[in-house]
Length: 349
Image (cartoon, rainbow, N blue to C red; front, side):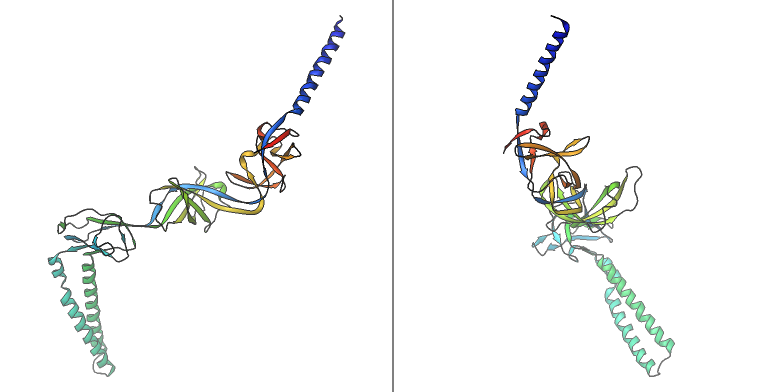
């Protein structure tokens, strides 16, 4: 057989095989799962994370030497312990020292204050009637003022012996001392913390600079309490970018009314920067990135049709579609990996 004839026969065989494979490919039906596109909502947010700190915290130390006595918590009927809540102004510890109190001479200072006040008031009346000079009146006033300062100073010195909560909070440290033992000045007595509100310092990405502003709401969650969401607010934003990290500093205050979050916990959050309602929103993981753009597949009459889509708002899970899809279309959410435009498909659950 001549070579031209052999080549012609081989060409016909190959053409027949290719046509058979194409027909076979057209007959293959690919199972897919679909969802009907309905209007939805989407939020675009900036992710944050960090360690929360209390909004208020104080360490109270002795200012005078004296004998230690722990007071009774009126709400429990027993001496204060770690974890007790204290109201602002509540006395927690008393330091007593008779010698110190005697040296203050409060009673005599109080009596002197009363006498100088009476003298000043009498001199004021006499001056109004022309009975004393202005100099005599001013001397009486000076004596009264000095007596008042001395009395107020004595009261301040006595107050140092009564350890009171400067704000409402929780006792987080209460070193033990034997009742009545003498404690030195500058001894740590108690630590109080108010964590009904917490603050969080975060480093924010440079690209979010135009999106974030003070007053924006933040959703806060904790890794150990993933189902609890607490509200927060952006309170401060630095205008300066760190040239090394390409980030800027921000502060967030977190409401913690049930004290579910504890100071020192590592939390995560989302600062909502934009929201869209009544729009087409689809899962991000069904989008196929190609050279001509991002695309998805819809099903019409058993045929998969590829659609190039244009994004609007997006977050790590979802994306808003502003062009390329319509409501009520059937969007392929499973089985799209092997699809091509015009593939035959079978819808399954």
